[in-house]
Length: 223
Image 1 (cartoon, rainbow, N blue to C red):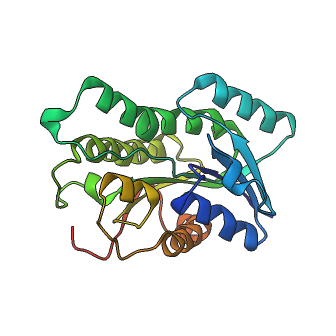
Image 2: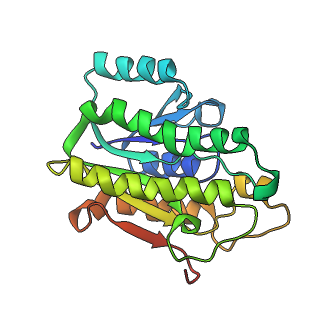
């Protein structure tokens, strides 16, 4: 039975990944500050972890280590999205977003690497808005730049860990999540969280057979 660790699981795509993976009988470990939504889902082991807090991460990793848990798949799904014109941003705007989307992602990944099997697969969730040459939108200077950093980081990690695990990054198009609704009230995305979660699980299980260090755009619109 494969062990899958997922970050950012209190709602949206992360929640759906956990429930769908549990229904497929995988061993699912959920990481989120709010564990209530998944607390009663069979097959999901929920941990309250703040990926922007180093001690919170170290306590979580220590617990896994003590139980000799080995990880097959890590899905870095936790994200922070805000809609704010660049002229209205601040140092805090950038710090809050990069703390989750880049620094937190890097810290949890670095901390879990010793527990991930050499044949394992790390999936970093980015955005089509972070892809070089893709259409950009006003209000997303902070978010898109953070997601571009995730893409570059993934490519470097695949080189540094050439003997495993594999690293790939999925650049998602708009998905109708709570986070999207809060940032863009009134906007309706074509893709539902459960649809995207199904794709991500399949890629997590099979993508490393064909890809390593690759950016895969997952969007029904052109770049």
